[in-house]
View 1: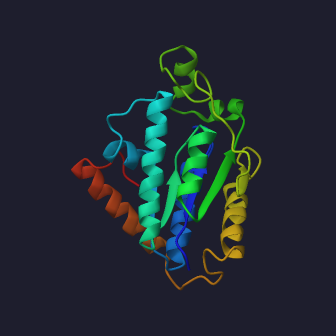
View 2: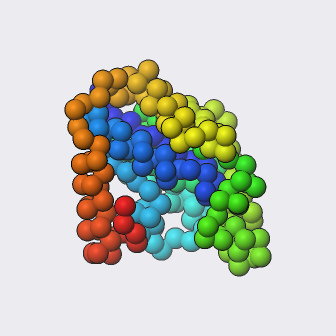
Length: 206
């Protein structure tokens, strides 16, 4: 099977992290090599000097795209959770990466604002956080995503079914699950993330 990049895009709070993590674990359960590239890991290790202007966001998204291309080149699946707010930059990654799958986590702004336990949207509306996607900076919805999930209407399981069904139907992952304990996979990832956190390569654990 060929390696691929599956990129979860959407507003902050739209469900990217939850769905990308679940997808990553399911891919590993199928016995395939994969890496999960989320915002915490990328910003901490590859883009710590960048802010959130359009230029800096574009640089960050291009870096993730190039890293994903390298992983795919060597047979490793890349699972990405990143807002990637601008269509032009997403299209550039699509041109770079042969097997590029875009998952649009579609969720209305008013819903993600209500979900925001950290209060980031409220701070952005008060002008305390500049260049905040969806408030003071635009989010350009994908025009033709391979997969679109409506996370304000669907359960996590329903959205996951869409994603996994697409990957199976297109031949990116085997339809038959390997006899691998998903609990063991998740525990292994938790220990790896905790190791990274202790060394300063990640800000939070799994």
